[in-house]
Image (cartoon, rainbow, N blue to C red; front, side, top):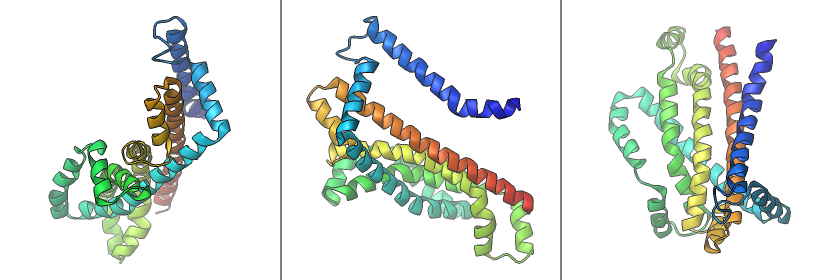
Length: 261
């Protein structure tokens, strides 16, 4: 019984308490004058500004645009990264060939790629989605290849002895067992993708929170900037929690399927 109560607290209560501690420290820093409110607005001013933007509708509309861009980038990265991860896990030659280039691609910052995308693709939704895809594809490749490579070879050999085809191995063994780690990659990638969408909107343009952040920066509106940052943090936390719940469900299902075998 004690463990049952401890798990919900660790998942929900502990993060909430830690968040309250951070907000309390933020309040103390501004209330005591340790940090000038021209540089760091008070929590109440920030949340009031956030509430006003949400009630007016423009922040929610911008958030929706940025989240759609991020999710489209995550989906595209998954469609590219998971098959590449499968190839790398199954072929030492492919792993040796692709690993250096995949790693090197992560050394190029998003702010350097975004201007090139405007030249190659133009403006609008597409270059932002491509930028998000480029940011997310690396964790998807890595998690997919590691997940597939970590499957117990004896389990695969037993299935082959029973006459399982390559498709059946993928459908009934490899995919279910690798799915939790793949979703873990999605959990990381989705939050990275939001950052990619914001950077893309600030450089390429758009109608999302990146545009709102650029406007607030141009007007030296510190309260507006912090309100947008808080909203981004909340959105990223929600996405992270959703993928974490999906990952745990997939892990539970994979364990159940494994016990049946």
